[in-house]
Length: 462
Image 1 (cartoon, rainbow, N blue to C red):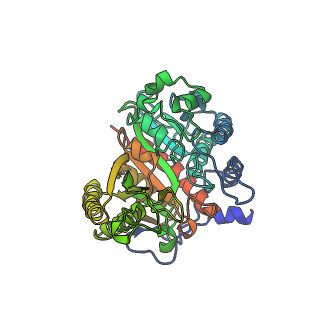
Image 2 (cartoon, one colour; image 1 turned 60 degrees about the vertical axis):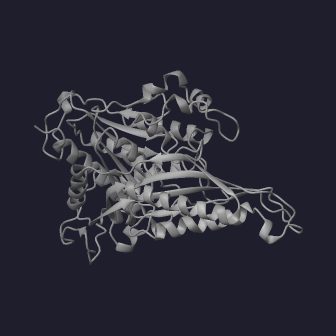
């Protein structure tokens, strides 16, 4: 057996278990992995070639792009090789449904259930394969390739589930293209509709045109909506994208919920004038006001207790000359927290601070909301399924919130959901240095496999 295989079979339980973590005795016999760790690694490495920059190692595979289209063809091939029936919905999301096994070859699953029902709702699981600009190779991709691997493992073990199973690849989760996060899943959840079809990207190409390039008819966009009640649950495996699991030396995160996110685009209007002849007390300096407002955002967020965050990631200044006072400044404000009320409270304080700064600087700041994603709590039953799966592998778990937005957040509007996290080295994500170990990825895929079977046995049970 190779060193890699031995690593994948070794539980990553540390000798000490942090408060709030759950663990099984490390002296238990090593459990069998049902998924194929080497195949999983190979397919992830192959997927990472689509959109890779040889100079930086980063990947640019935006949603609704030629790079994503090529990557989708690769994943579609993997789905078909796993025996899935593949389709693309009207929003461009890719689905692979598992057909029923022949009854003569049906075997009871590991959870002891040998009853099936075509009337039961679907268990949906997957993630996304689009990236940010110059991003990493594991964000989203781990959840997609692991989901396909789970199907292959079920087939290889002749395991039939009670619920129909379907793998999904959501499109444009990152939202770098068209500026809308979780776009594909938001359309499926009914949050977005035909109003987005005329939205243009930086090249002037509309959403409608990109849907046509994906082989879809924009007039049927709403056909992508998933009806409430049609899903038993949604489950997603993902890298943490933060440092908590690695710091705690815990290999598995059980997500409690996903933070809400609100974004505003703020424009500060001053007056451009000569930098040498305009007295300091007569200036209407948009950049000076914007600089103070950026710090006001930080102060308002720090005034609250908890794990909330606030970010201003860029400032655009006009006219942008060294000898001209800035007449216009534009910047985004982003607030995140697991409590929607806290986000609103911080924004109220920020607006009040902006008004004071405007009066002092003799400028006008106007902010327009452009993104609003509600917080979502994971389902207790799905949390229990993930913990049980990890315990069966002898792996410790840590309950934690997700600070990043995920497609699961949109699925929460129509079905119960759960999320599995694996560690991110140094908490780095959305960068070429993004890294999760192959043993952690293999364990994550195995937990996904076992969680699906746990959920299949217990959801909709009579």
